[in-house]
Length: 183
Length: 100
Image 1 (cartoon, one colour):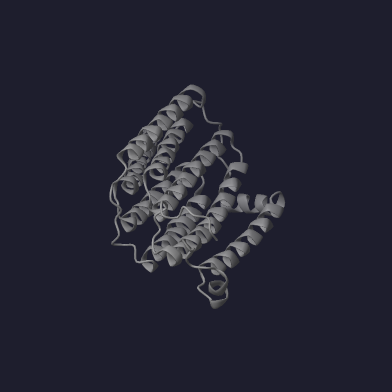
Image 2 (cartoon, chains in turn purple, yellow; image 1 turned 90 degrees about the vertical axis):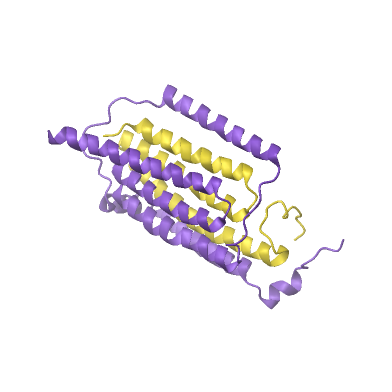
């Protein structure tokens, strides 16, 4: 039966890539080198792109790979290399703070899963194909959402200017800002 | 079709991992990466609900979240570069004075 086979295959893909996403996200917690953390986060983002395909959003899966795994994480890696942090691993200190952090996030996870199980288990998915290809999203984006879309372009321009201003070591900014506060 | 709550549970796990990193680590860039992980977990929730209710609004919201995350990453990393120029470290415990 081809239907049962594709059903099984979908679950198999989901569990394999969910495991990959969780394991490589945990690498960020467990590994103390920021380069290893950034590279494992790239793998986790690729696994999340597979999740987006399973959720019938192939356009956003492509955007996830291009924008997140491609642009944002490469920016992170560039900054880590630029600041020469790749050999600097932070040592484990403050056991009380670490313990409280782990227990708080574990309690948060347990409560989230409890409330998902209690309130967010829906019945059947609606019938029919979910029209979520690039064409449908584009038409919607340039009809109903054209004003937020233009606002995002202004926001990105402001981010470019802000990033250049903050990261420049020009004479104009250095002269005005005292580097050390007098003790 | 995989039911929606599996995706919600995966998103909850990824979000909690991000919360754990923010609470336990002191390296500023690692904290910033885990914020990106939390943003991605929320995006997964948006897409799961978008498919559950056949609404395009969730997908378009994810599109905007990605654009804003890109802007946030650029400005945040520029702030860390600036901090490193002034303090020679990106340990967030060292950046505790708002003197400029």
